[in-house]
Image (cartoon, rainbow, N blue to C red):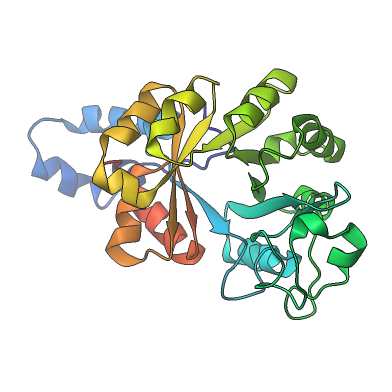
Length: 288
């Protein structure tokens, strides 16, 4: 089963119109007309036999068109047509859960200091760009609930954030089917799978040597860096043999490099969601 709702795209054969069908018949002596029609019918009725498009997650919502990790960025990603927004989760000094990428607020806001040293009140007073505040996890979950988006929640402070806190927040908003939790901690993965096995978890492994540790905790998907998959395609096979989906972080990759990632992955986390969506709709085969 796919980690999240996945659109299915019928193969080229199943989209042929009546004019092009005779051309295909003429090109091959292996199928008669009736056999070809039967094949098209099967492909149309059984989407699982057709190629699945890679899901596209907009990295931090946007890193160029709107202030990253803000509701404005997530709205932009929704407008582009992304399947998911990726949001980074950290914990403040008072236990508040806020969406921001860096350890400190220095780069993305008008403030200074570590997120872990600042209270929610202080964090909310900061300008995250264009007058946008730093959103809380609750605000992002509420936004996703009323949108067509799904959410990849990248738990940056995976060793400090409690699994039950995440579970309660997600269930409280009723978005269990819309959230994929990205964990950098095998401990957190285990706790999530114990307390809420219905929630989907993406292992954001820190290095290839930790793959087995995360796989052993029954993750639903594994995030690999695209460069890892290019260097060692066996990693992709290992993840799939374990019954997990393969997600690739592609960052600023574009053109042929992004195309290769889209062809092999079940999902991509990208700074270029528009291009990735186009490529996902064009390409089905999964081979590096």
